[in-house]
Image 1 (cartoon, helix red, strand yellow):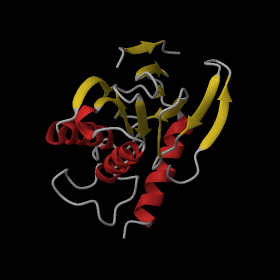
Image 2: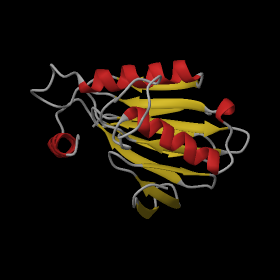
Image 3: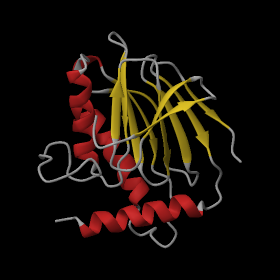
Image 4: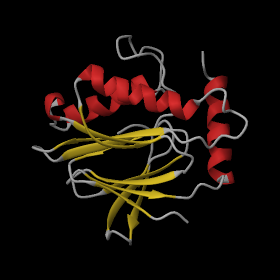
Length: 198
């Protein structure tokens, strides 16, 4: 596991849950749910269907391409976030060659930052990373203007996605802007079910 993540009991799914924020990741081989909320950030949900080990990351910027190293990056950068999650899953017993991916996020939610196209860059990065690394893409829900809440069940590979609506989400937008500012300061198996917009 990476830095401290929020553990709680999810009454909706009647099981232990882990909430991850930008720059975090989590992997497990037990019956829990990993949850995150995405705007322009992207999450990759990876799963080994034989060992029933899965995990999810949440990153804000693509970082270097798959062919370059991840030195000096953090889990906030896509290239490093992907390798951290994969390595954690391998330590739990997963096999890289069996991994399948479902990817989410990359929405255009940061008003006034359309020129940066952060969501599009993140989406393009994760698809390219999976292609270059030979990791099968089982499902995707990328781009759009809707923030998403993603629930990943690492024991079964199931993912639920709840679209939060096309309206600008001030809390999410503020969180992403604050996180982006932090980055600048420190720069030195089953089907996907998408339900409801509110």
